[in-house]
Length: 93
Image (cartoon, rainbow, N blue to C red; front, top):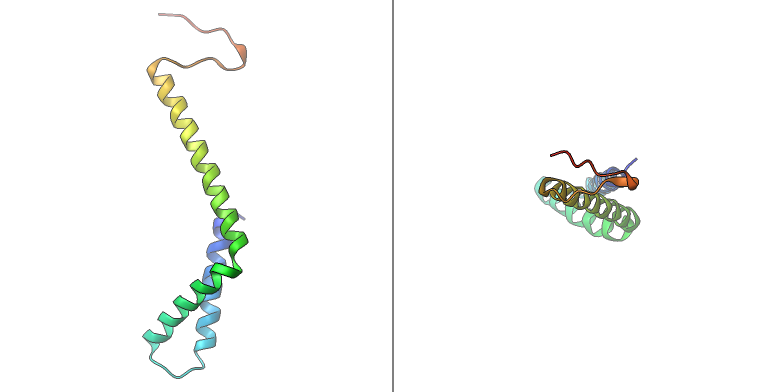
């Protein structure tokens, strides 16, 4: 399972858990939802740090791969592409 899915499910689970705990308190439903949102966000900052860092790492790797692929495509379109693995260049023109 990807880190983003784990983190998202963790955030949702924390929200539902805090909301369930607040369900026992007598208050306005809108206020209960807002408090559950704030408390679950604060808890996730501490409890889900590992998953958040893992997700950030995966996102950084994906961004780097996209950047490298973009640069490779730009150089290929500009005619600066180099053959991989020592293959001879095709000089048909």
